[in-house]
Image 1: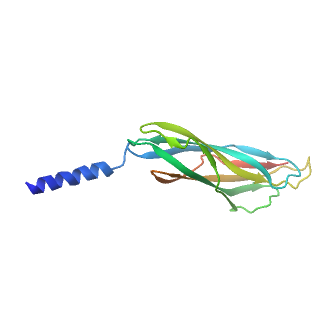
Image 2 (image 1 turned 180 degrees about the vertical axis):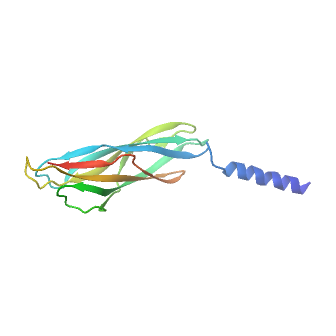
Image 3 (image 1 turned 30 degrees about the vertical axis):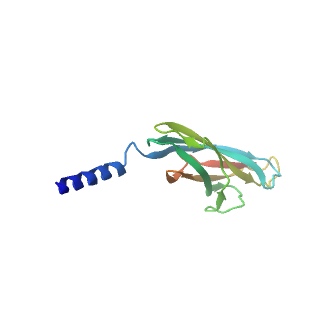
Length: 157
């Protein structure tokens, strides 16, 4: 009699820990397509907007504690201050909402602090840098990483 009961407990534990609809997931991360950096700008602050779809398949709410972003320069056209591979780490990313209810979905809206410098004169040749954006979302359900499906282009003209 003891054996079947022990086996049943193991089966229940495995079912409770399995993946599936009971998980918290992130998908479909996107960022602003571009930002025009004005001629003569020097470390001029701007907000990069991003959004991420979330789904909470758990039976309790998930709290979003923090979000960070890494912008990595993946391509350049014309003169650019940084080399391909340059990384900018943005740690103080603003986000809303800070909670996803049990069994619900929400779009997380993010504001990533960024800046640009454009030493070119107005009317000069157009140059740009394209950045891939990777997001790290720290929640009460764990830490999740997701990359944006599009790139962010900073345009200097």
